[in-house]
Each structure stands twice: as structure tokens, then as C-alpha cells.
Length: 174
Image (cartoon, rainbow, N blue to C red; front, side):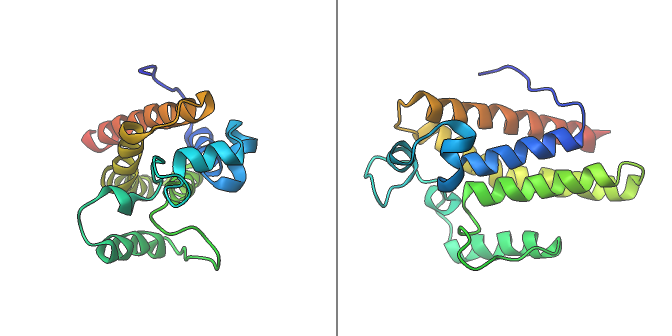
């Protein structure tokens, strides 16, 4: 899927991140992406299905997981966010996409403040590069499901994140 995804503004991009975050969660997959619970666990829950691809970034890296969690929590806490009781782990793709939803929501609110925009664009670029793209790319490579909704969700997310990375790089270059 190489089609560029065009969104008119940061608010539309934020809404799409929120949609993806819900779609990659167990509770939201059926509603947002048409993926029934059994298909979701077969595709994305290795604790239930041996061939499933983990949606946790820590499953796709060789570095120490505590260092990963520390870095993620620093990102979240810098923007005033914490982890709620019963929430997914900080390295779960749905959490990382939700964080990008928040950053793009903030971007939409500060359109007339160049310094704030620049800071948010740098944070978006860093988080996409260091975390979101890494897990999305790994999930795309390791997905073992042939369920059309699972495949479409992963491919659509990968295309969107790739476009977002290109957008972030262009903004930082200007």
C-alpha cells in the first residue's frame, strides 16, 4: 500500500491516530476495524496464539525493556501524561498511537505559535522514529494473519505512519 494519505490538517491527523489507537486495542478492534476478538487474539496476542505477532514494541527489540519503558514514560510524562490503572503497557502500539493522537491534537491547538509548533513537530518526529515506526514496521513484517481486516489495519497503519514520518522530516528540514 503506497498511496499517500492526505489529511487537511492536524485535527484530522489526530482523529486518525485516535481511530488507529482504538483499532489496535482488544476492546476497540471489532468496532473500529471489524476484527472480532478471536481474530484479534489469533493475530496479535502471542500469549494466546503461538504464531501471533505482538503489538508491544518490547517484543521486537534486543535492548533492555526497562530502558525502553523508562524512555517511553519520559516522553509521556514530559507532556503531562501518566499511566492509568489497568492501562496497556507503555510500549503497546495502541498506547503509542494514542500518544501521537495527543501530540497532533496539541499541534492543532497551537497553529499560530511557531515555537510551540516547532517543538511539537520535533517531538512527533522523535517519537515516530524511535518508537512508532519501529513497532509498526515489525508488526507489518511479522503478521501471520490472513484475516482481511487484520491485514488492512496493519497495512493502513504502516502507510499512514510512513506518510507522517515523511511529513515530519519535511517540516524539520524547512
